[in-house]
Length: 160
Ligand SMILES: [Zn+2]
Image (tube, rainbow, N blue to C red; front, side, top):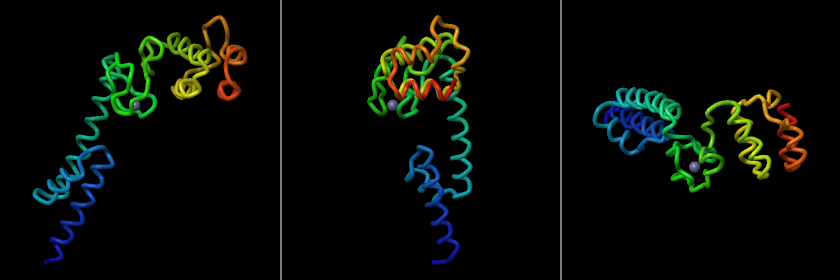
């Protein structure tokens, strides 16, 4: 076999691996690379990848879908169970992390503190919500000391 075909095969494999890392079909892109060209397939992977990301952001913005806070896959906004990982994502207003505004997010944070839901508190804090600018009656630190767990208090203090 000529070296050209060996390289062709190896690059096809690499494109397949690259595609599968991005949640696409390994075999699909491997075969496409073999038949068409590894370089063209690589371009297709990268183009569809950035399209996927754009449409993902659009779908979250439109409010039709939300990101599961456990596995980071997109699910319908009304879903109360993630179809990808099976996690319970009902929560407040049936919304995982798609908050209408800051006030909504602050309310969700206190709700999570009250329920001692450490994972949800952590996820909400990761949205870069400013803990110090809380418009609610209780600030989050007091609220955490009142209702939270030691770990929740630590997380809130670290952000205050
Ligand atoms: Zn999930």
